[in-house]
Amino acid sequence: MPNSVMPTPNHAHSHPSPPAVSALGLRKSYGDRTVLDGIDLRIPAGSVFALLGPNGAGKTTVVKILSTLIGADGGQAQVAGHDIATSPDGVRAAIGVTGQFSAVDGLITGEENMLLMADLHHLPKAEGRRTTAELLERFDLTDAAKKPASTYSGGMKRRLDIAMTLVGSPRVIFLDEPTTGLDPRSRHTMWQIIRRLVTDGVTVLLTTQYLQEADELADRIAVLHNGTIAAEGTPGELKRLVPGGHVRLRFTDPTAYRNATTTLDTVTHDDKALWLTIPSDGSQRDLRTLLDRLDTAGIHADELTVHTPDLDDVFFALTSPTVPGRPTQTDQTDQPKEAVR
Image 1 (cartoon, rainbow, N blue to C red):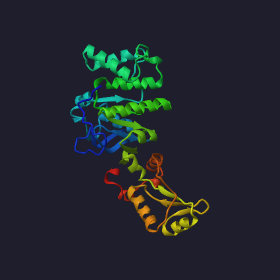
Image 2: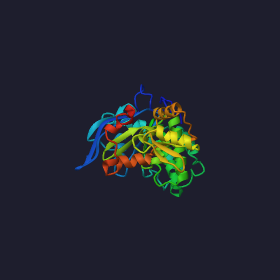
Image 3: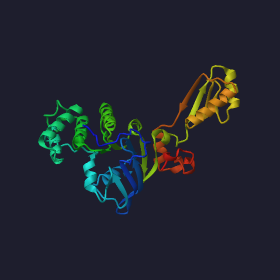
Image 4: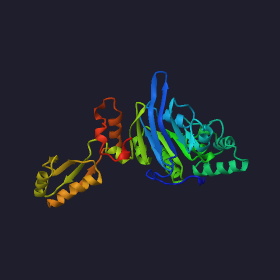
């Protein structure tokens, strides 16, 4: 479906265009339980932004507030240029939402589900039929279109769910844990669908508990913990927040190995395997410094591998109840400015 309304800067660093979604100080409590404790978000148009967090972190609450399903207790937000408080209809007209639980009606066919959405969007009959046919084909559901949706597999229901979401050509789509309960193949199909949406200029806010999913899809990730954003950045920036990254050098020449051991400080070494391990954040600057030192000393390593912490490490460090693993403000000062908000 053409989404001509949308500028298509495909990655997060094109700041001049207004963000597709922005939020400042969002708060929400239920009784004396604070679910969101002042959340700030800025999601560039035409990008995928992942909200990552354990169960109960407040991910679904963020989606419900931004999609105007519930009100916030404090703060403000704009979606596709509309204020969620003063222009909820404008927000609803610009967005699509796919929740954790399918909105598909199992008693009617896939095609009838789609036509129902077209009616809800007040599309003229002919346009509704054309849109339905196009989307069913795009989501590989044409063969199943005349079958009751209750006969669909989990992956097919999810695809139909997203197809229904797209009937109104939304510019911003909220996907709340869209692949929960899907098998690996269906999950990969869903990832391809999400990537194609972004290529068309749609902005996607994705909530997920799957770290691999966030790593695969997101331009930027915010880790939500105890109602606040513990860290935000590109997947690469987040991985550099956690200690444990290192460079490993392997030598075949024992002399070169010994020279390297004396030249480089803070290394751990394996004299049998002729391995050296040097702490590193994996950044280009860090690697260049290391290689320059080796070159200056005339040392040649046979193999160099960089190990950076993965998102699992980041997630556990930021969301574990025991705070020791948690990066502190001072740890973060030498990060790129946008890495942590």
